Image 1: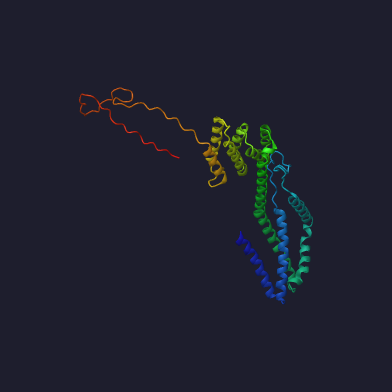
Image 2: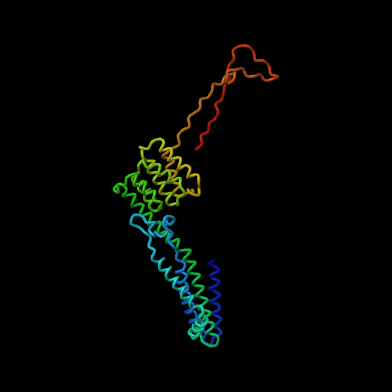
Length: 335
């Protein structure tokens, strides 16, 4: 894409240089043409920016598409003013452009006549100036739209995640003083809004209670976003450190984490989710398997009956029978 965009810009500049060389006032034509190209490229880039501004996808959109604060956490809600301005301006520009589309050729001729002196004047200067304006307007629009779509959405998402992470950290620190009851935390998690579910998990990180172990297990078992899954694992880590958990609760917690770790898409190696999950599994070791009793082995076999004698072998001499030494199997323990 970079090379294609550079090639299109280069083609326009080459055409401008050739036109300046053929003009009587070459330096003036080149300088004026560069200014015209840059002006319309910036204008087109601004239009591309307005059309490319990403819409805010709220976590609660499925439950309430009109609720812009669905991702809001304690004291935080994304600002959508830029998105609203973009919607208004694009609608106004499209409406005005469609109503004036019939007069577009006349407008282009007027534009060319106005810009002809800036590109050197002379015959053909008006047509070249109009073509230059249209060319760099379209080029600027495409460049602005692509850059906005590729870079702005990523930057806004990173800023929102950081803000949400800061809010979660504040909730963890203030969990003891907020005095949420276990049922209130459960109700907060059951709202269906990701921001509120994350806050419920943050409360369990700061103030883990055994009554909501099943909530943490259910959160880990669900298909969560990476950030929400990390908060669920951190809540599970806080739960695992509690000595008041029963054996059944510890087993359920370990089973949920161990099952989730098997899916490398949800818990990629070398991610923070993987390190937190491994820490939980170390705190909650798997129960040791009970050793099965082995039957004594004697010369007559495990059941005490005489083993059949192989054909073609000599009969054993009379006298006391000395049991054969049985070598214990080598057991290898894997980590």
